[in-house]
Image 1 (cartoon, rainbow, N blue to C red):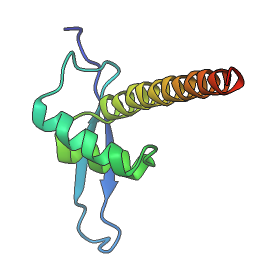
Image 2 (image 1 turned 180 degrees about the horizontal axis):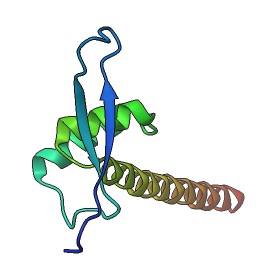
Image 3 (image 1 turned 180 degrees about the vertical axis):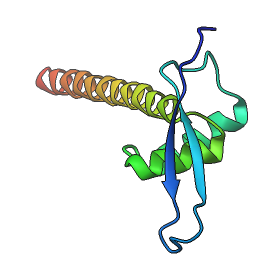
Length: 108
């Protein structure tokens, strides 16, 4: 696996300026080679409800799945491409079926 160059995003709690509590969220420039089944199930569940999560949603998903932010962004991008390809295939199949049906009706 390639060496990862990690960056950190700091999020401070806004309600108390006296106490500096921050949470570091790692960001990587490379995606993992594979995801665990638990991570895939969580990602698929989120995808079924929201195809285009915003940045905050991505960060929350990354924290829940114990993944890097960029890994989640890449997974959603690849999953949307797969989903759109499936839609295009279904539309093409429906058009072909409709065309065949119309041709059969013309012969009667």
